[in-house]
View (cartoon, rainbow, N blue to C red):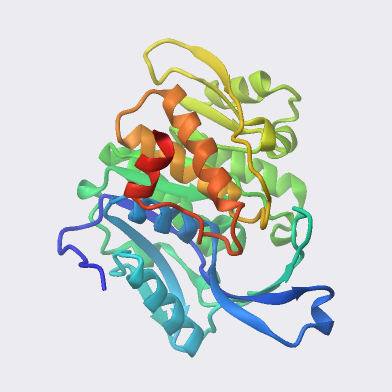
Length: 322
């Protein structure tokens, strides 16, 4: 098992991990008899990806004191994740989801069983032991604040504390409309949270919905005007778009997508992209290099079954970037 350092994590992500049962065969989930278990959750996908690249990553969450909660803890520890901020909840269950086996690169249908889960009871109190002075980066998504009012309070608290301590902050909206009371609440809340981030990473359709703007440039300007230093927009197979001031002056460019021979599972592509971009910027690379790496890692994620199984180690990444 990987060695977990005793020092406080330098990178923190937070949210809900779920046990995921993936169908062994294509078809309606009602007709499938055999599934295999994997780990799911956008926030922990990013945590795992950054840990595989050698960063000291902590993950904050709640899991139930049930078998699926133990599975999640063991899986994350096996990936070298610092688990000191995982809280055990004796009163609420670990979230569960089912995912169909899609064909031809289609987005697979998923069914969630997460209402009232342990992670939906996350609150500011769960952040009491975090060492913000050791933190260099915080990654947040728009999923956690959608879980409950207390999880929203936690998200806002972590982003504010990270900003005050001088850590950089990335924010991926990761829209889950079904978790929000209305589209307007989702839009207003996520745009408020994005204003606390340095790097905002929406998909193009997400950016259009959240800002009311059409073009990547206009979407980027919406968030730059609200305090972001860089807006990096995922364009799917076409690649990604950057607009920001990370190099000291405002610059904009497109980075072409990576060709993929066969798309196996599209879920997790955005998380892989985030891993590539965040790791590159933390490595001190240029925004252009960061987008290239984001496109590269995102392409790896969609060529395997599972949300994070395709995320590379540092050695594999060096090989891919040659």
